[in-house]
Image (cartoon, rainbow, N blue to C red; front, side, top):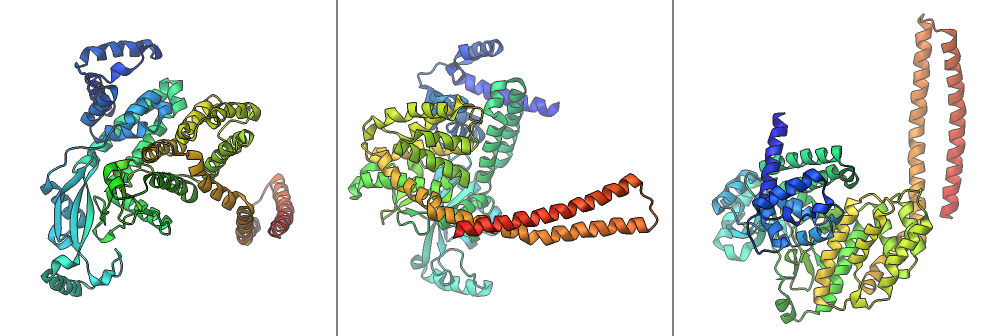
Length: 552
């Protein structure tokens, strides 16, 4: 009861701030039930006069409510199915920027997280260069030790030897300093986020109890997804792991760069990365002055994003221009890996096939993919669904290349699939929303960018590699491996069955009298076991024959 009261007070405060900033006045009364309409009228009495647009009012309200609501706003920008297209578009403009916390607090947080004085970890530790709701970033310098050979995290020196080397290096310090970016968790943010998320869970559970529409939109799952995302951002080690995974995935990519993690100076509340020198993608004038081919840069950005999503199944889900740079070698460099997207092989196949289906105008196949993936219930007609998809694809193919938006196509597709009871796919919506941002950045460099021509090589390569002869051979090999694993566990299963039979036999010999029906049942079970063992061996033999035939 006390917990519910605390949650209600927290939600009431949020409602007051939203009402005061005029956000609730943006709601359509006709779409609300009568009790909510009354609440909306009360909210409008509280609204303060302002000339700000809806996006600015919403941004101001969420910023006042704190980090949890800023993150909620950013997350809901990826869920137009929940908040509507217009509000999702407003939320896209929400920038996670806040005033930095004090330098002394940041230094104390770093010392507490790393367990040693700041001067023993960093040669210099500068002021904040950027602050957000969860953390802020400082530019710092560390002594580059010979044992590291230029790569962060190699063999460590013995403590006494390291101290001697540092003593020598400090005498000629400037030539041995390496610049790093240090991301520091905002003090007290974890406690605040936990309380706010509990209140949001309380609201989501109440909504799903009383509203079929809330259940359809899976409001509890929305909050769960937000909580997972925020949990990752509050533990810098998890973000560091995401960075190293993407760095491994893209190690051989000539046009994309990921900073290296300094694990020695990384902990739950601190993340240290190699510093990225480059031109921010927000500075179009500097990019043009550097002599870069801007249309090629736009194409490269779009292909890089699709390659990560399809090839790796792991993509940067916050690729706005403020998180993207171009380094001196012309490579795209990304920072801030707090929000990442992941696609399973099934989802990657779904994405590749629907994109390829639209590119080749094979709407029947595009429809079939939805049913094969289990996204659309089987009681619907594939042909009717293909007709709905054709209504999306044909107008796009009749337009100029500059008018074609792949992100808009996916938006329309998800709207149409809603008519066929396709359940919300949060991972695909995150992909679609990230594609909106990436496409917008790419088109800022080339307004006439042909999205189909840009995407086609990446999609075709994935199709050929995974659905062509090579892909089918890999599937057959995987099937053979599964059969092999099954054969490996079969002796163990048979041995356990034999031991169980021996135990039953021993119990009966020790004088336990079993009913005649029980004895008969045990005998029948033993005979059945033998029959199933024989059948299983025949099935295994047939499976092996099929696999060998496919491989040949």
